[in-house]
Each structure stands twice: as structure tokens, then as C-alpha cells.
Amino acid sequence: MLVNMKEMLQTAKAEGYGVIATDAWNSTSLKAMVEIAQEKKAPIILSLAEVHLSNITAKEMAELAKIYTKDTTVPMALHFDHGMTFDEIVKAIHAGFTSVMIDASSCDFEENVRRTKEIVKIAHAVNVSVEAEIGHVGGAEGGGDDGLGSLLTDPEEAVRFVQETGVDCLAVSVGTAHGLYTGIPKLDFERLEEIAKVVSVPLVLHGGSGSGDENLRKAVELGISKINVFSDMLKTIEVNTEKAGEDIFGLDREKIAKESVKECVAHYMKVFKSEGVCQ
Ligand SMILES: [Zn+2]
Image (cartoon, rainbow, N blue to C red; front, side, top):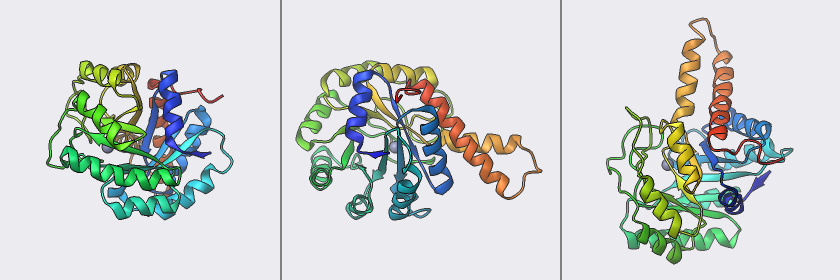
């Protein structure tokens, strides 16, 4: 069932597990995510990133999500990921998304607050939850580089940002990056602990892919309630397709892609301790 992300993450925070957030890019990936969440009795955040709008529109994704989740019982949020432009975020809300992210993390503090507040006002009026980011998680969604580097989150600034904007959850920068790493990143757990101590809303970790299961499990234990995973799904598809050899043809690829998404999501549900929490 489709729900707002606010309560879902507050429950996760209170019960000490993390909810996986996965970017879907077409109907197959979305369906795989809905199916595995229901199978594993784990909440999920079905996301569509603004940079992926050339694959599928927010309206199309929202219609599909309504159909696929119709008979499901576990909570699923439909979330617009890394909303950069005002118009696209409002379009997603209008299309039926239950949650949006406004990402103005590349702007200075005041401008980030201003843009975030604007979206919070609109979204909250129609019961849609809002995520924003303070500090900056480097790299680009799905690989590449946004050229901005990473800027670690300052705990005091995070507190001020939440107070001034009224966001429902906050993405923080503690050492992860978008895309694939060459090694396992070193996370700044001390900083995360400090942020979790002073910030009242659930915290979000972007760039979960390739960060190492131990690191991610620890991040959840220290107060992360939502973890974004994308590149690892693509990697699982690639590895499994390669394993299938040269004989695969046509729709076999689609089948492998669907099973790979489920395999990757199921793995992380276990790591984040969310498997089986919705009995
Ligand atoms: Zn991200």
C-alpha cells in the first residue's frame, strides 16, 4: 500500500532498522521492487530520480505504482528522488507521489533553506513528505561525477536546517558518494553519531551502493533510517547477465533484470534489518 514516508521512517527510527530506497527506471524494475517488498514483508521506498525522467515520467510511474501496489499490505512510499527543479517536484506531487526530495544541497545554506521551505509548504498542504539534503553527497546518481565533490554535514547546521525548513527527514553527508567506488569508503561514524544525537527527524544516507554491508549496518545502528541503493542493482543485473552467457536472447534479459533487482533489494533488506518487520 502506498503511504507517506514520514511515519514509515519514524517507525523505522523508533524500531532501529533502515528502509531501503531504490530508484526504479521502468515498469520491470518497479514491479520487481514491489514484489520483493511484499514477499519479504519489508517496507520500501519506490523512487524515481529527476535525472531518470527521460526513461519514464512521474505520471507514468505514479499510475504503475498504483496498479502494482493495489493488493499489497506492506507500506511503500512513492518518492521523487533528487528533485532539482521546482516544476518537476510539483508535477510529481500532482501525479500522486507520496513523498519528494528537494535537493538544493549544491546551493549555500540560505538558498537551500529557501528552496526547501517552498517545497515543504506545498507538499505538506497535500500530505506529501519532504526530504532535503544538508552538506553534499558527491558523485552523480547512477555513476559519473557532478563535479561538486563532497561536503560533510555539520551537525549544528543540520539542526538549524531542520528547524528552519520543517523537513520530514534529512539526507546527510558522512563519507559515502553516488555511483560505484574503487574501494570501500571510510564513513565518518563519529560525525553521524553526533548528528543523530542532535537532529530530531530520521536521517538518510545516499550512495549506499558498494559502501560495505558492515558499514551500512553500523550506519543504521547509529541512526540512519533510509538508505539509497541504486548502482548495486545495476551491477547485479550486469553480473547475472554475464553469468547467463551468450545464449540469452530477447526477453531473457528482462527476466534476469527483474530477478537481479529482487536479489539485490532482498540482500539489503537483510543488512538493514527490515526484513519481516511488517507482519
Ligand atoms: Zn542520492
